[in-house]
Image (cartoon, rainbow, N blue to C red):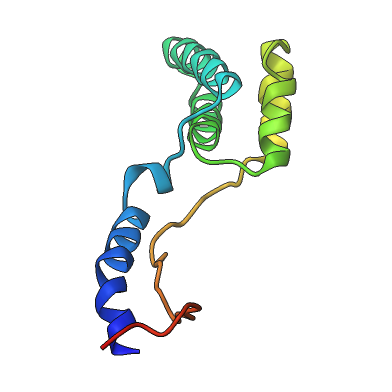
Length: 122
C-alpha cells in the first residue's frame, strides 16, 4: 500500500488544490447567464438612479445568484428567461434565488481512497 501512496500523493495533492480554485467555486457562466447578468446590472443601475432601495437589494441578490453556479434546472430556467421581459426575469429568478447563501464553513476533504490495480514491484 505504501508504494501506491507514494505514487498517488502528488496526484491527490493536485486534485485537492483544484477544489480551492476559482473554477470549482465559480464555474464559467453560460451565454444565457451572461445575458441575464448584463440585464440585471442595467436594472441595478436604474434602481440606484431612482433610489429604490428595496428593488436594489432584490436585484443585487438576483445578480449574485445568476453569477454563481447552477443546477441543471436553474440553468434551464435562466436559458428560458434569456429573452423574457425584465419584469418576468426578476419575478421568476426571485422564486428560485435563495435569500442568503452562507459559504462559510464549506470544506472539501478527502476521507478515503480505494486503489485497484496490479501489485507494484518493490
